[in-house]
Amino acid sequence: MRKQIAAANWKMNLSLAQAEELVKGLLANGIQLAQDQQVLLAVPFPYLLTVKQLLQDTPGVFVTAQNCSAQKNGAYTGEVSAEMLQAMDIKYVLIGHSERREYNHESNKELADKVNIAMAHQIVPVFCCGEALSIREAGEQNAYVTTQLSESLFHLSAEQFKNFIIAYEPIWAIGTGKTASNAQAEEMHAHIRSVIKSQYGEEIANSVSILYGGSVKAANAKEIFSEANVDGGLVGGASLVAAEFSTIIKSLKS
Image (cartoon, rainbow, N blue to C red; front, top):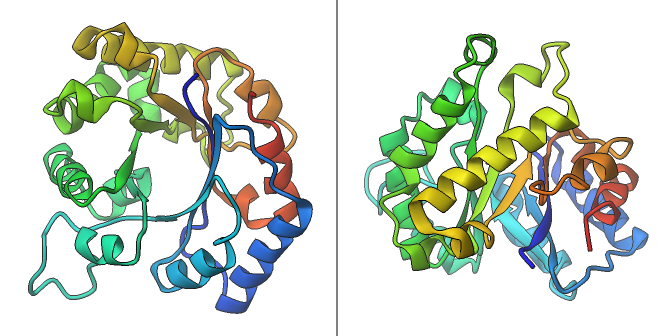
């Protein structure tokens, strides 16, 4: 069975003391994971080693970077390289989050470069994709997401794509007052899996974990995660509350 994953994205939030308190709160709630379950905590760069230390005795829970540079090294002030992440034994990295696509104008080509350099340093990308409201209203969401996948990922070999992680973000349903239904989430997840199947075959497609990133909360996680092609969630605000995120972790399929 493919991995069922609860991924937290802390974004640019929390002081160091608050970050430590949040992790200790999660541990106090008890993180009991089945063999096919994982928890990823995408924390701000300054907290990577601190959080990693706190989690060192917690199987199945991995510290995750929120981004990495497409460049190996050099005069790129403020950037963090995959080589640096590897040196800290960071195993996962978010690539292509909707906020970075919008605010940092990251193109599909640049994201392909980031995927390549992460994988070259034995770091698993959590590749984010998804459409804005105007694209959804035009009924072009399937074609748009297909292009994101094909231009950033489909140069990879089948072996590289096995056990990949994708996070679908319905940008139109985040902070807009509009709500994506469970059926809409499942529909897009099924589409993404079908596109992967067309490129790599059924076995590879069924190995890929596809996470839902549309305002997952404790109150709706179990219902969303019950959909056949939804393999967990990429969680924003709700991941900043220990009790809330603990409930989300416990909502994963087993």
